[in-house]
Amino acid sequence: MTKQYLIDYTLQLADNALILAQRNSEWCGHGPVLEQDIAISNISLDLIGQARNFYQYAATLIGGNATEDSLAYLRDAIDFKNNLISEILNGDWAQTVLRQFLVSTYQFYLYDALQKSPDQQLAAIAEKALKEVTYHVRWSSEWVIRLGDGTSESKQRIEKALEEIWPYTGELFIPVQHETDAVTAGIGVDPKMIEENWKQKVSTVFSEATLTLPPQNIWMHTGGKNGIHTEYLGYILAEMQFMQRAYPSAEW
Amino acid sequence: MVQGKKSGQIIAASDAEKKVLEILATVPDPEVPVLSVLDLGVVRNISVLETGSEKTITKDGEPATDEIRITYTPTYTGCPAMDVMKTQMRIALLEKGYTNVQFEQVLSPAWTTDWMTEAGKQKLKAYGIAPPQYKQAVCTPDAFQQEEAIQCPRCNSYHTKLVSQFGSTACKALYQCVDCREPFDYFKCH
Image (cartoon, rainbow over all chains, first blue to last red; front, side, top):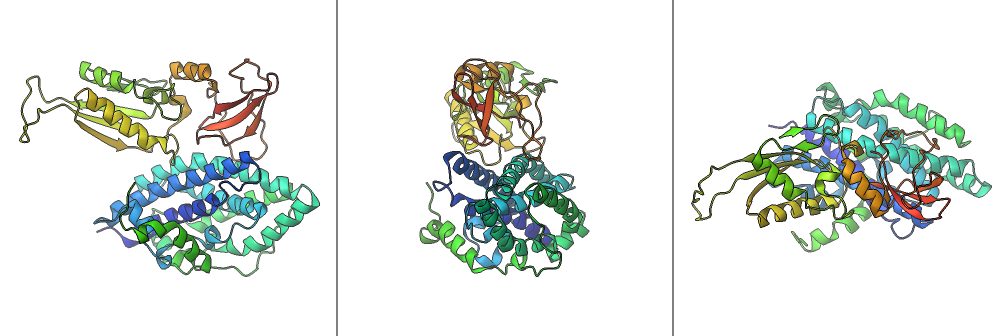
């Protein structure tokens, strides 16, 4: 009998990647210039690949009829365990690249630690994903610096984005029950353990971008990891799941 | 089968394995058709479970064939070409009479451009794609790091510039030659 916390922990990793991938894919055909349109779409593709690997593993843990597709397309909002930061709106380019930087940096330290997990499959996926995320961190931090230390317009845009997104970063480092259980079992990564590295990297890039780190004690949104989402997730799922809901088991 | 120490390339340990490798060497990467799946280094292991020299007949009346097990690793987790490569390997083997082919995906150790064959690198360059660097600068997350000098596959100049770390496929970056002005793909280190 597979432990429920391991299933939930794996689904959380998968959902985080899938929902952000779906969000980023909205830029496909709408990027500011062709090369950056391609870049954000490539990042989406990497995230979908990571999500697929985590879903495939979760499906084997769940057993029965579960597949990567049933987990992506047939669960409802309350079953999704992604951090809220993955589902909030893309906003403008500044908001998209800032969110990408904050999430990719989180994933970078998370996967770096997870690749040492005694759970061999989680470790293998993390090892693979880390190489891809390294490129995402580099690309997104360059954009944060470019906009922050750019023109007065770009500066004003990224400062507005920071105000919008920062209250969603606290959740990344507040463990929920299945994370705590996975940590106790020695399999998962304690989010508290990666928080310092994350803050260090964020403040290094912010300082180059001439951005001010928001105050420590501001109020933070939580709930995503326990299935309590913003209204935005429903719209994402409505679009993403439409085909499988309207034409169950459709294949092409 | 055994693995070459340096490149991680696989070398047949028996005649049966050699035959299978010869077939796989004809299966192209759908995105970069000058490379075979072996050049790319995604096939990590093969094994042939022989059924014996005389053709026995199975219950279904079909002649039994050797069972081929192929262990593969994706280049990037989301690379859509991987599914195509698997299907094409299956078809190529089927055409030579191998009906029993099993695939297994491994993720660790993660695929690296170091596993690309020397012949593969030459073919890439001739095709107009700059091959991954021999002594690769492993990508770090640091912003605006010093770019590696990538040689233009057209005019061989090192006077080139990075346009974007992300190109037409997951495995490539976009460059432009400052001398001959030709834009080109670079098969980026991974």
